[in-house]
Length: 395
Ligand SMILES: O=C(O)CCC(=O)C(=O)O
Image (cartoon, rainbow, N blue to C red; front, top):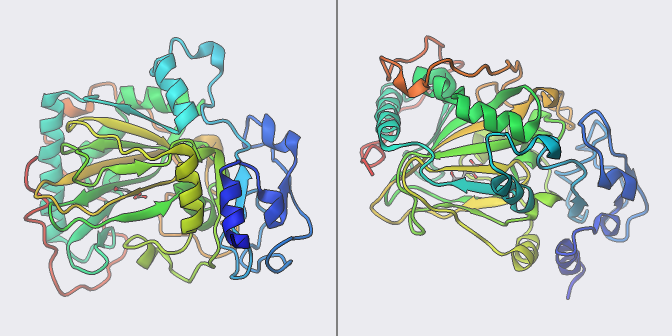
């Protein structure tokens, strides 16, 4: 077994940071409850790779990553809570104790048919409106294409492009969940539609969102989660999001430095900030692998540090997801540790606003497909319009 393999195997025993040259002390790793209580990550002589501070890390961080070639991958135990609210107040919250316990232990929870059939129809109508809007604005930078084709992969900042989705992000049910999990006022770090049209939808490689949000956006800590709303039926076959349950308790510091303007390629196909195959193998051997499914209207919540991926969709049936990424106001972004320019604000907001719940149910709003007047942030010339006909196929 090679040295690298040993490091990855050790990941399944949770704490191997010291092997890789960093150490989180026991007191640091155990009970810190707030982002403002920094856990000290000490450097110490390395046993593998070159012993030098990575040039890519300009600001000290508890979560080193984007390490130069030659350094070993890091496995750091989580040093902050998963569910931030106090245990004593959990019984009267939005999620019941069983759902909270599942989220805490596995890093995700699935809420089948969270939205009813009328609500789902309204959301699917809005999805179609968004696809029509995208077809009419092929140069909008918020549109992300598949890696090897012109098909639409994602629409970012849908809280800007869709009044209905913006209102939905403030649905009282979702805000109550977000406040319960994060124990703070919350803001939207990012929103997007991830489209997986039948036959054409491509895979997403294994990654932790927090790794990227910390290193490219400057998100301080793991006080953030994704709310995934299924806009089509999700089956075992059409590309459900796959999770390594429990992996949210290990931060994997990845090898590979960040190129300039990385988001321009990483949103199409991520190759930087991804754990090694050995790490994924070890973590999946330890934790298993799950891919929650459910009818359109199902909601899956998952922690920002949970390792996840999804397969390409070779079936005729679409798999479309709406993502709202909620973060605690106390966790608002700062300068990224790399010292590089952060990603554009349509990918990660830099001016968080506290989300106030809608007084009325967002899905009852009239004029569902109206767009906000938010102008395109920046235009990148494109020559070919997107292919959206399969994408708009109803599920
Ligand atoms: O939509 C998917 O299948 C996975 C999405 C994902 O991993 C991401 O956007 O970070």
